[in-house]
Length: 217
Image (cartoon, rainbow, N blue to C red; front, side, top):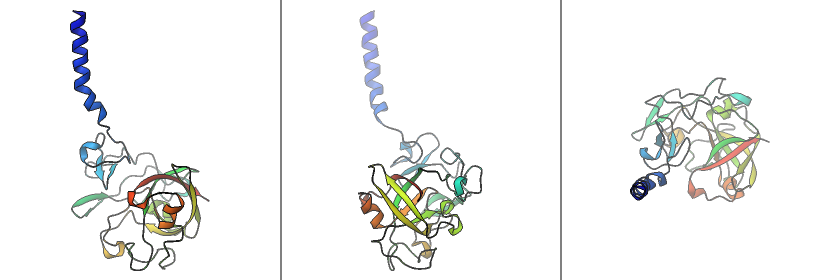
């Protein structure tokens, strides 16, 4: 009887081991398909996020607007969706609270004229050299331009950090038009950095999205 129970346990372990090895991503985790995301989260731009059609707030229920984040206080919820290239993208007028170590997703932007960044920067109406460490912040963090010209400190998981100037908004409310180079709206936790930012942090911009932290300098 004991041997039978042991054999049965081993068989069960062999059956469920492959299932346990398939990691399920939580908020802001990497994904390729809907099955890669936990619960009601869906895969948007390779990142697990709330499903705007369901109205879930698993990732955005932590509040926004604190620390001058520009979210207006309370929870930072999606204010609607925008269909872009056949996919729904959540729209945000707010961002998570700004702290001394604010979690964010670093992306790469081309701030030069004729580049892929679209129109000139919101802060000064000018194009900028990508060899200079500059960033665009999600709409909530951009806070109506209140951070224009200010320096922020960005720290990568490898321990390296860089000081960068805020020159633009990574629009979380609009997209998929000529002004935004036909790109979808930004998530509400984006630090969109120039090539110089990625280089200073020792990161490969071809990765696309990297988790970082940032704070006001």
